Amino acid sequence: MPSHDVLIIGAGLAGQRAALAAAQSGASVAIISKVHPVRSHSVAAAGGINAALNPEDSWESHAFDTVKGSDYLGDQDAIEIMARAAPEEILWLEHAGVTFHRNETGHLGTRAFGGASAARTYYVADITGHAILHVLYEQLMKHHETVDRYEEWFTLGLLQNDEGHCVGAVCRDLRDGHIEIFNAKATILASGGAGQVYKPTTNGLIVTGDGIAQAYRIGAKLMDMEMIQYHPTTLAGNGLLITEGARGEGAQLFNAEGERFMEKYAPNKLELASRDVVSRAEQTEINEGRGFDDGTVALDITKVPRKRTLEALREIVNIGRDFAGVDITREPIHIKPGMHYIMGGVKTDSDGQTTIPGLYAAGEVACVSVHGGNRLGANSLLDTLVFGRRSGEHAARRAVQMPMPSTPASKISEAERDVSEILNREPEGRRIGAIKDELGDTMNQYVAVFRDQEGLTKALEIVERLKEEAGQAPIDDRGTVFNQDVIAHIELGYMLDVAETIVVASLERKESRGAQFRTDFPERNDDEWLKHIDISLNGGERPEVSYSPVTITRWQPEERTY
Ligand SMILES: Cc1cc2nc3c(=O)[nH]c(=O)nc-3n(C[C@H](O)[C@H](O)[C@H](O)COP(=O)(O)OP(=O)(O)OC[C@H]3O[C@@H](n4cnc5c(N)ncnc54)[C@H](O)[C@@H]3O)c2cc1C
Image (cartoon, rainbow, N blue to C red; front, top):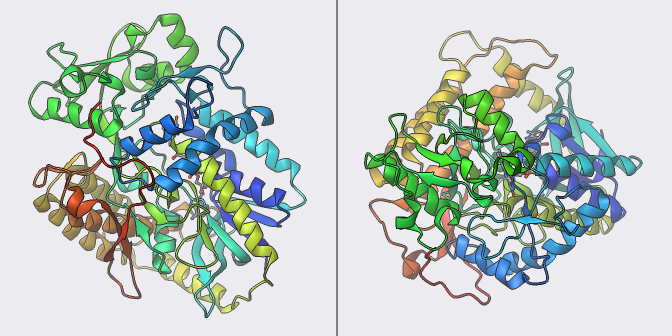
């Protein structure tokens, strides 16, 4: 049985940063990933990472922009920690080898991003996540004596001892299907978001909410689950992202009547208002008949000098050409709001500790909450790194103070039984792909930019029916070697749990704030709803709702205009 001080589930930016921090603090570490670490979804991050590093900028300004962007639902103590730590984190990355863009004077250069009062986004063309992830992986190699990498291992569930403490996880080796217990003094979930709950999404096929569901199933609290970000510029149909970096470089939005409609909705910030505001504006134009026939509006990147686009936005030049047949340097491209990010997740404190002793969470799986009702672009990479590091350090400190907990070996046979039950089902009923499609379509129809009681109630009924159906659904592959069919089945179960909590929280919040716009409650209502919605199983089988206060340090809620 592999035993380590710190077990990290997930090897994207949050997981790798946590692993480095824990190793540097003297802990023995295991890091597990269901794909090769550099294929983790962080590799797709494009536009950049925020920090108030420029002497004319300040961490206070970054923090305030984040609080305002969150529609005052973000916890201000955590936001302060993140904004203060950002400059040091950028310099650490640069010294580790990330080739951030430099300007004509040779200094680190920035681009503008939405909702920010200064251009404070540091970037590597439009492959920022790729550049950082590869450098972290190189750094991890240096620690090969204390960090054991388990690549292409799938975590099936978290383990608790009799006191309810998390003591590790039970995992399946994807190469041959064998199952092992990983014993640990501290376990850090860094398993990313849940984009695949929706269809389409900008997120890859591997982003299935595993960690959120695994924590929830052992009783951890989730928070802000209703807050789902629709990104303003995604391709219709396939959901591929056109980075906000394009608008940061000067691209503009037009409706089918040739009107630069953001002048109506956000006269000061225009296309660089925060994402919830721009997505709602686009969807309003589309719903009121001023969009194109394909249900889109146009993003005109020809406003950016061609040379600059080819240099700084080269990936979206490829995406436009390969997936929409459009040369974005010469003509506008049709886009629409699309599901992109989950602001909610496993509730943590600012050291990553969840409500289960011994269990930490960091990155998109977690909710600290620094994004509140709406995340500012380029704040997520920062969140993964700052809170990944803090979780790694805290988990290592916990580990030195305690002996290795014991874990019953019987958990292996229980997990084996669960997997064989799926493998041996009769080949009758709908396939998991069809169930997943219905889930994604349902969420995109009823739990999207605009929501109401009737649609949310319908969504909940469908999700509950799909949960029943998925519990019986058969798979085709009964083998052991890279059996992705059985994994997809287990992931579907996670996605359905996550979907249920999203819908329950959206029904609960009877106001409009950030990404949650209720057409039946169109105003923000601070008197009743300036609070977090927490969801947990609380020992039962259905999600239970409770509330927790929003931490306000220095910025009282104000009307939010851009
Ligand atoms: C197209 C796109 C562009 C983006 N651009 C930006 C940007 O420019 N700036 C910004 O700030 N943010 C951006 N974001 C958001 C940001 O990239 C993500 O929020 C962030 O990278 C998430 O990192 P993470 O480490 O939390 O998770 P991930 O990078 O998703 O890593 C999750 C890890 O968990 C592992 N895992 C999951 N489940 C299991 C399991 N059951 N067993 C074992 N391992 C498991 C995976 O293999 C993976 O290693 C973008 C997002 C997308 C989709």
